[in-house]
Amino acid sequence: MSNGCKSCSSASAGGGCSSGHDPKTCGEKPVDEKMAQTLGRIKHKIVVLSGKGGVGKSTVSANIAMALALAGKKVGLLDVDIHGPSIPRLLSLQDAKPHIEPDHMEPVPYSQNLWVMSLGFLIPDKETAVIWRGPMKLGLIKQFVRDVTWGDLDYLITDCPPGTGDEPLAVLQTLGKEAKTVIVTTPQGVAVDDVRRSVTFCNQMGNSILGIVENMSGFVCPNCSAVHDIFNSGGGEALAKEMGVNFLGRIPMDPEVVRSGDEGFALLKVQSESPTAQAFKKIVEPLLALG
Amino acid sequence: MSNGCKSCSSASAGGGCSSGHDPKTCGEKPVDEKMAQTLGRIKHKIVVLSGKGGVGKSTVSANIAMALALAGKKVGLLDVDIHGPSIPRLLSLQDAKPHIEPDHMEPVPYSQNLWVMSLGFLIPDKETAVIWRGPMKLGLIKQFVRDVTWGDLDYLITDCPPGTGDEPLAVLQTLGKEAKTVIVTTPQGVAVDDVRRSVTFCNQMGNSILGIVENMSGFVCPNCSAVHDIFNSGGGEALAKEMGVNFLGRIPMDPEVVRSGDEGFALLKVQSESPTAQAFKKIVEPLLALG
Image 1 (cartoon, each protein chain N blue to C red):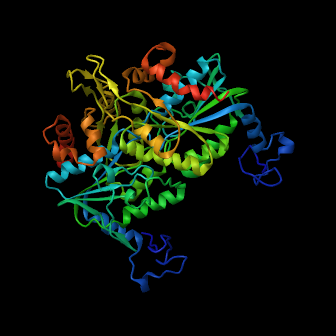
Image 2: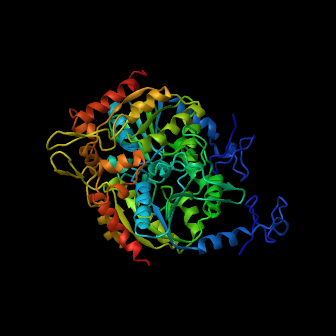
Image 3: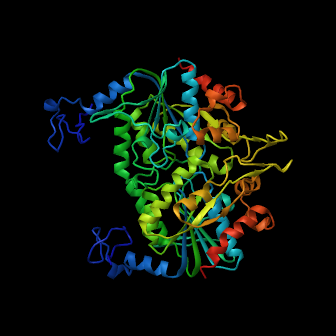
């Protein structure tokens, strides 16, 4: 295990760093030890990812977290999407200010057993375009995952940046091989093309895939009840079959999901009998079965 | 102007490089001069970008390029979306193999006056997850933009990777300040949040914004003609007003757009009278007015 300096995040064999910070005098724990302690208190680490942006990854993350919390589990929801941290808006937490200490951050309580931390809490204002350069981005993700004091959790749901580049790589490397993934796609071929690469990515990384969720699958006209497959249908299930992974289920295209996201109320909480809420509950069953 | 070696992309004051390639003996032009020559033959450089993935950036890029080409302009369509190059599928060019020489690549002809180049042509197979690391990614984007021999063009439409990080930064830096941008959003608040940052990003970079396109704006039930704002409506127009930029128009949510994309036929070509095709034509008017 390599040691490192918390003050500057650089590592050295001796446990100090090139900037001269000395863990013996400042009393800080070496980074990897701290990380191991944090992660050791989390029973199941679930990473929600997608090769393509805009498929509803954040919505799926938030509703999975909510469904697990409603089932009585202790849940953390971590949003590390650097360029589009949507979780604060989805849960009406835009004005939340997490308690931040020099060496750790405390997650924001959402309900009795759901805690939330998002990069969105730390970005100064809604107009600012943070032009994150590569190495800065990686350091930020690692530090961010490491420094949140979750305490004892049954599940940590991580909303991962899209793609198969540095960002999801940093997330999986930081959480380790025991983290399991949920891959989100929309049904149309153009999305499935990108998401197929996510399956290969998880395999390359050695992280097991809990399954694929097909989001925005079919639209039921609220006026005449005709079903329209606007983004086609079945692409996620076909991909799961093709790649030999579980298919967790499909979530219909539902204006209520969009509205609940934009207005920041949790769909599962208020609409627990709707077909969409039922779809989320079904998707969460195999996650609950992890024990 | 700095010189550099094309063979290895490294630069030195003397015009050679650290690998010992000598432009005097190999006859290669210094990189920046080559870039200036390529860009100098392109009248209008248009970059299509979005702070959020999955908003239909590639569909908008392809149809803008198509509409300009149908209006008799010479058009290039460049797809530099590293993690999700969708243009080959959208135009049924998955099997196209561009002609590649050591120092340049020739774009694939799509019609008499539309040429296409995509990173998708160069990625080995559809399953491979290329885990591009930061610096590699930037080098690739710059080289890719530079090395395509477009010849004389009226318009180069560039389909840019999403976000406001290194990738769009590399694209705008490479194309220069005279490149103008079209920003794509979907109407819902969660998307508008991310896309707002794109406006700030373009302002920071000094690239003028032609306007905002609102995609997936309202769904007309093909059965009963009721209109449903699945992703809400008007968010793009409100953002344009708020940020003081032009609103180019809205494109309805149309299963035909998805089908035409998945099956790779150009919507504008086959459905020139549909409301969606008309919406694209209207959006292109200010671009045609550039002269």
